[in-house]
Image 1 (tube, rainbow, N blue to C red):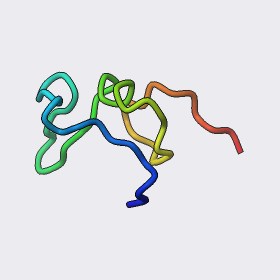
Image 2: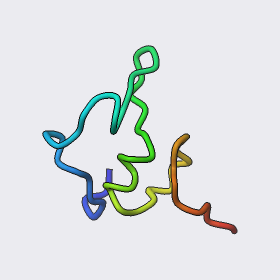
Image 3: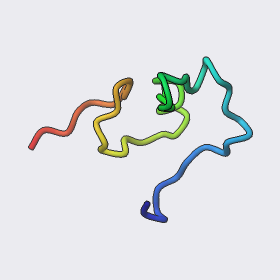
Image 4: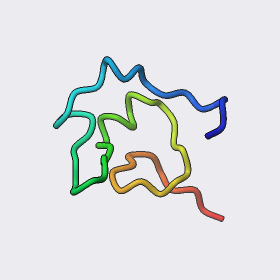
Length: 54
C-alpha cells in the first residue's frame, strides 16, 4: 500500500459505525470514508465521493 495514503487511527474506529464484517471481510462504511477524507480509487461499496470519470 502506498505510504502517502492517510488512514484514520484504528483506535478511533467503531464496529457498526465505521466498518462491519461480511463473512471474513471487513467492509468500510461511508462514515469511515468521510473520516479518511479522500477517495482511494478502489471502488469501495460505500464510497461517498463522486466517482472519477475517465
